[in-house]
Length: 325
Image (cartoon, rainbow, N blue to C red; front, side, top):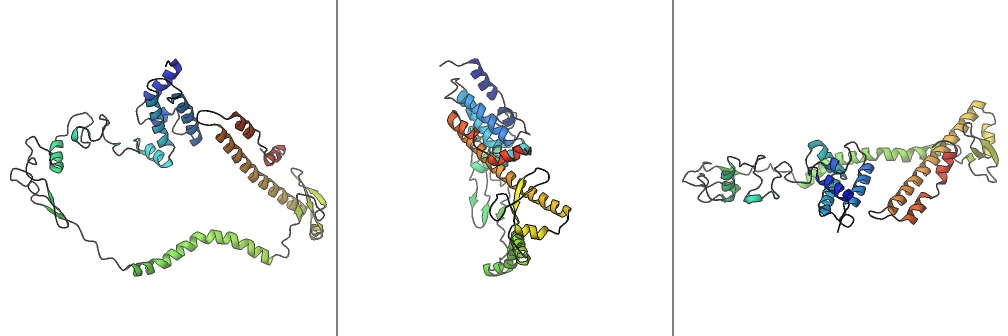
């Protein structure tokens, strides 16, 4: 199947970077936000997907993109990568990548960056894995035997014991107190830590209760919806928002100064705006979720997208009419 120059260019561009240049692979910067990284990955993944791009190396480029996304989409892996510059998903990220396997040629990652062998590579390998060949003093005889608490190195060859029959034993841990005593010692501290963690929540719950107990009347003095009880209209000073008060308000504030009444109106206005902002924020989150659901990986549901874009947002409309957003 033939492919276009653009399809070839995007594949070769992705493959031109080194395997750990994750930001360059996804065409983003280190300072890019999570949403920007996600959008760039989706755009490139669609262009490099083997079902969409017939280039013979598109599958390889798609895997490279997925690798970069795996690291940069995970906050913990991304932090490790930003600090170290190495692939956090690789157990051998600090070793040479010249071979396709960390165990190439029967070794376990001893090759140096220049491709040459370490002077002590063969001896170390033979010592621990029983390899043969060469004139190493560790080349013949039994490798080592286990026994007791730990292990004992035996003769490694030539009748000479390079470790002088060194015996390593495990250190016994100090006796631990019975579980019951430990639990009793930790119980008061754990209880206090738990109470400290719950203290903010308790304050939030207790303060309104105490306010209600010691206040003369907890019924509201106003409403934003007119009714038989709330039938006297007032207006807020800055945005001219209508609200309605009852007879209790009239009796309570009939002897108050003009400044006190204005402060009351300002308080009502602030509560109204705070309520609308919170509800508008929830409307915007819901709209973004619907748009994201409509835009798939490879196809976009135009009907769902249209519905999401035209979703009613009454609280945001109120704030917009007040020039607050």
